[in-house]
Image 1 (spheres, rainbow, N blue to C red):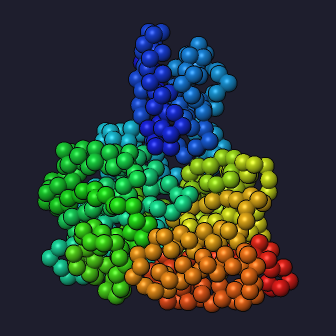
Image 2: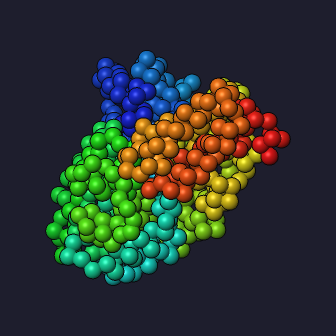
Image 3: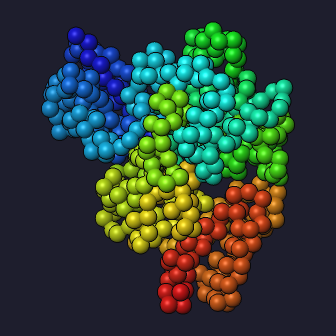
Length: 516
């Protein structure tokens, strides 16, 4: 009987030696005359266990990890091809607590299937959402998405159904669907995991979006730093065309949708939707004035749906299982699940998909296992480099858009980066201003000049030069950037700066009594 072995081809797993492990398993099997096949799957998102090798058994898939090439001979000696005992054996993968207690909706197939096998995708409930969408009127598809409560997972959290409804009702001879796959936030990797580990779900979601609004052309704007995602997306798109899931006659419906991948050129600001559209049109990535909104005048001046990878990859399960099924997860106005990316100074970094409402404390300690250094976790930045720094006193606030807004914080793309007690928060605030200065498109003065002045002012505060005056100046500067910048890059840089100053004033030479 042929044994089936799974070795991730996810880029993070590859960076940890997965390619060498796959070759070692193949070579050792040939030497020993063991009959097996190796499937290159995506990552389960348990990155402290990568490379995570799995073996299909009658009871389910058994995991071993982290496996290195030198471990392979002893794995074969232990009979791992049939689930044998070994020091690296983890038991049934689905029973690992980190994975067992998640609610995987968007990531239901990631780490389970061969990412570029259409047959594998179909065998795991793929394209069921599209088949249902083909039986619905465009307005009914939009209503399903609206009723689900799905909000944009790219940062702004705007209701997806409202955006789609605007495009649906905008008269035009041509409409577009654009996927923002320019994942540039520090500590985030969920978009990459989807595109590398389950590209068909993104293609299906974009196709459903096209049916909903009357678009016939789609583009995935992919950051150039994701070569493995680029390869898998193109392979999946080709397979979808061959099988009739893309093209002039989708599944014999007479409906058309064409899709292609376009590479970005490394600018962080192109993650902002209008700057992305400028780049997609072949122009310099500069932020556009709004209005008009992209839903009215987007790509090439036509109505355009533009959503993040996770938003679009969630659409198939909404259409397949129904709006009510998705709404049953979450809390308040934050419905469904959020793929959370846990990184930084933690023992167990990885991808955790949970319903809205989980707390940072649970993420950091029950999933992350505390800090990797063993020191207390002092600060956590949530929402990427423009997100606020949260102190330990706010670790119990539920992850919910409105709850975070109340404490002047954002969930953003779901990135969570932890820092232990050795972090200097004044220097982290300086980094935020420096990041903005480097990545600014330069179109508006508050962002272009304000961030440069911000670095200078923080340097003076750290050096204790005109201390009180520069602290007041920093707050005034942040107020100007917050209220006058053209886009979120300049407008949100004050979040990490002011949160660091407010919650960790001692690092700026201010005592807590004075800060209060």
